[in-house]
Figure 1 (cartoon, rainbow, N blue to C red):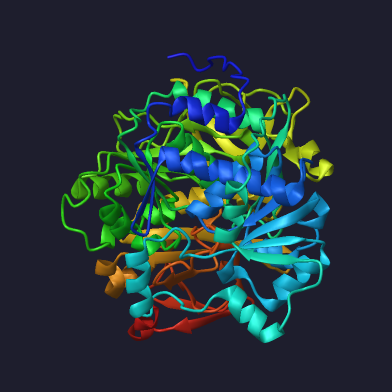
Figure 2: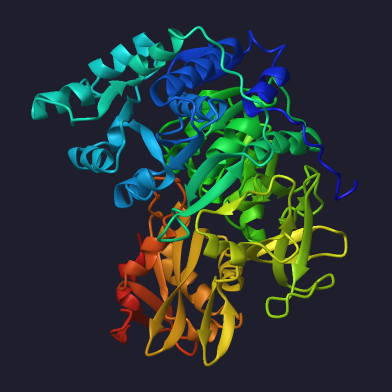
Length: 592
């Protein structure tokens, strides 16, 4: 199989391309959401209604439409309706929108905002108004919900009976001057009234969307700009995949639509281009992942490693997920021992394939994936997808490295984005010859496959030497009692030190002292600086991405423990406060 296959530009607008691909699927169910089912014919009609409604409100200029809504039918319609109206879909999470309202509305020339009512407040409405937003479309979790399901939910108190707009008007008596607030249903009706067709020509290099991503990897969002023809090229990349994806698949969506991969991997390339049925899950609870797979009867799913890690103790019977053919894991690097545990769990539950996927928002689509067949259950290597090229470069000189040497992974992609809104950041993203500098440490093996270890920044510096934290994490995950682990760092007196946060499997909760001794004895460069290990029952979930909330871990500076290698003593460590000896009989303090 060739690693590089040229991807022809289809020269079609995104929705037009989707229509052609689904010309024989119009009666097929495109989406399922809280008891409601929508055919492809109905889905394309909704895209058209939203497109015309945006034009009705905002004219024919190429302004941005700010969208901050969960992965619901409403947000999918808003995304495709906006780009088909020749506007820019400005996808932004609620936290970023609250913190930087003007920058991500007025700053991108957005006069229309589509916001989930659960994110709205008096403060945000006021900020949007001050930033010049003229039309606020309010979405709700009940939009498109089957009326019977909605009534049952309201009766049981699972769904709020209050309407945001009604409550807002009651409390304020009037709406902000110069701003119109309407419900999603009223907005969609505007488009239905317009009979005139609006067909825009294909444009090379047209910006289709902004993705304000980075919720778990940075304090500030990266505003990645995506080309319209990049999206249609993505579909062409997936046309050449070695996966057995087809229109009979049921694809469960666990990723918020305003997080870039939710649109591109989950909705577009993972579903609509193949004519699949998309099952939308607006609540991003990774601990309900197994139940969601069971209830949805999904055949494929895209998920973060932290989702898959919950399957082992999800309470599902052996073979319960035999309908699931493939789970594609992405979002962060997977360690070999972690993959082994995932695949053993998959075998018990009946899941046929657990596949490692790799890709960045900046490369425009997934760029690499593991094969369905593998010889080693621990194999986490990937090969570039059709049309993609990889190379490994020296982090200092930028020179290409030979096989079996770690370096920076750089990617050449036919779907590559336009880069960041902040031009200064693009100097770090793109190489002089147009490749994407991923910032990820990787290696190319002699068989032509690659392994991604983690971010180049996932390291600590002590005594003038740099130590990768992912090497430590890899060995921690080897332990049979460890379900999840994260290596973090603290800076003390000018030097950096690693610490480890661990989630134990339930059967090991009363063996924490033993696990602590095993971890403390790991022989990996940098472990001599280990501050300690903290045991938790589960990692907090980031409300935007459903991934592990890595950024919050260093905020906890107490409750770390370290086993002495030369005795049976166990030390309790409060970061920055020195080490306090705790006797063996008190070690139950670290059990969960």
